[in-house]
Image (tube, rainbow, N blue to C red; front, side, top):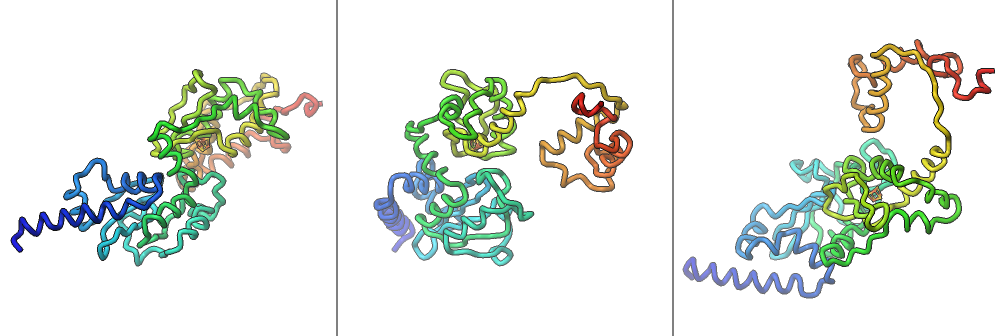
Length: 314
Ligand code: SF4
């Protein structure tokens, strides 16, 4: 068979393979798996050449999917994006999508991850050979409902529940969260929902027509309503915001004032663990913080010896 005839035959075979791959899949899975391999952007020859070569890669949050053709069938490799260049031998291998539920529970330091879409997914594992059905199942354990909501958004059918509606339907101990003002809801979204804290793209606002002035994020998948972590945080802030502001007078040097600001920044940005013990030029350095405490805290732990409440001063 000459080369051009062989090429036409292979393209015809690829059309049949494409049709039989997608025909029996539920709509959401089919749309997602086609998106993974750029089926709407690449022509079939280009796409199958890539699938037969190094495969086609897509990122989903911190997940990296690589789809390739193995023995005539699609094979999906799923791993952390930070492990993109590591060989399979260097990683722990898994073949049961259910294992993803366990892998999603703790971060690299063994700390529990209360928010599945926080950018703290652990590294060091791989699912080297999943089917299309299995890879979507595994993703659903890592990032629940993200594929379904992504598809709803593409279809123009994402039902968004805004903050006021969520807050007003809370009961029990969370009943109080509707007390937060619009400005406080801004601070709430700023603290929990930006890309450095959550990989979802926030689509909810204070209410319809009252957009929050906080970046929505760049994530591939949308967030359609305030999650339980945000509602729990809102409860705490609601009670804290009931306190009246007071004036205190503290004595600090200019460098100490800046150090207090550095400490708050380092904790808020999750950088405390990165600051080396020897780096005493960093305000949030442990020895700097201990020096400040030794110098400015009294025996009761009051900054500059100023009590928090008037009664304490008596
Ligand atoms: S409410 Fe905020 S923190 Fe929670 S999932 Fe949505 S974007 Fe993420």
